[in-house]
Amino acid sequence: MATGKLLECPFCSFTHSDDYLLSYHVETSHPETGRPSPFTVSESANGRQEDGGSSDEQEGAKDGDPDYIECQCGEFCLLAEFQSHLDMHYAEGTSFDETRRTSADLAVPGSTLYHGRAKSPAMESPPPAPVKEVVSASSHSVTIRTRPKDSSRVRSGKHHNVVQDFFDVLRGSPAPAPKKFTKQITPKEPQRLGKAELGPHADEERMPEWLRRQLEHGARITIINNIGPDGRLTRTESIANEYRQIIPVLAQLCEQDPSVSRVYFCNPNVTHVVKMAKEGGFCGYRNIQMMISYIRDARSEGYQLFQKRLPSVLQLQDMIEDAWAQGFNSMGKVETGGIRGTRKYIGTPEAQALLQSLNIGCKAEAYNDDRELPVQHQLLRAIEQYFLDSQPNLNHKVCRTTLPPMYFQHPGHSLTIIGLEVRANGSRNLLVFDPMFKPSPGINRLIGAQFRTAAPEKLLKAYRRGESILRKYESFEVLKLTARVPG
Image (cartoon, rainbow, N blue to C red; front, side, top):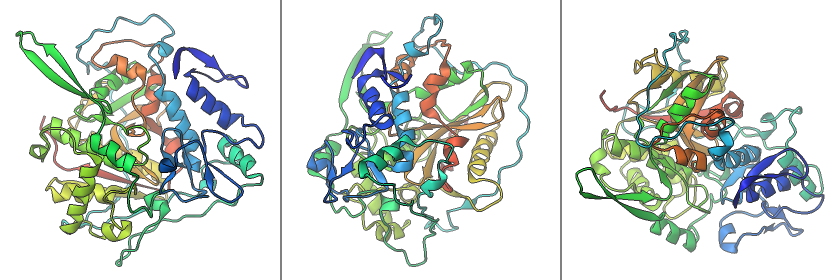
């Protein structure tokens, strides 16, 4: 629970206003020998999982699985990802006051954005490396699936992994050698995938009933009544896990960050959709919802199909199953064993199949770590070229476009790409909406406002994915909508 004042770690200089996150930091960074953390899954003598959650919450997860760890938020993460996951939770709790070292200007509700500061034209970037298109000439496409990168390559010996050390203490012995996973290309005869691709609930036939009820009910909806300038009463829906107009806030923050040389943003009509409490790994569905929010609100190709609320996770499962039945990426049915009513992970092939079955144009691209150019550089250069192809106004530091967002997959997780930063030092960051994390109190406070802050990088951290993060992976997939809003 956030207390409003900074709390200090008794063992180091770390501080945070949320006592839960501070406790989380202490448990993972300063564990006591032999004492299991209440925040993480441990193993008892008989090999069964023990944690503070209910049996329902553990249903479907295999005991003793060394590859995944459950966060208190309900998400299962690869062990190598867990420290980054915690870092995003810290960023998720950042308030606007924590970013102000000097007095900020008053926020002015209802102000407009995208008044870019004049800059000299950027140096021309070399053309992006060629990528392998996943879509075939026919509407029935062939896609790839990838396994997680060898965790031993994520961190070198120079970087101390406190989470791994913590688990070593719990086990009472050195950690086993990490598994070596390699890229797997879908063969002509599709085969059933496992936990590496489908997550810890890969063998699940039905999700727990409490979770199904939660998904059927959906996030809390609040009706807001407003009186317009003409005196008429208007009613607006506010859905608890949907956040609109985040991109204009990020644009102002990037404008004020001196470390940013230029930034490109997609169409601002993208809703940041986040998972509900304890729902687990439905990130693929949440990213599809974000793509649909753009289609609906920007009135792009297919918007007539989504006039009201976004389709729910359960509805999307039905739509994907229907797409398979129509022959779109139908090998997904065999590979997953079916997803209806389960918590199995989905990825690019499922998002692609759904869109194609609705006659919404899309193109999937794969980036693999088998060329001289590192895969993260391939990806970043290609995404920058995607924005440059729209011929943005390069005289502005903030380059706004009408481009669609992109569905972005790396092993174990998916996100939605909404922009790209070019830093003053020449490096690049993807800007993403991560369905695993909700906007921080600081971001929420700034929606619809004009503001100044002395430390914009703190509020931007949760949206940035730079080379240091991307280099952990050997492959990426990106799904782009091919129909764009004119203008």
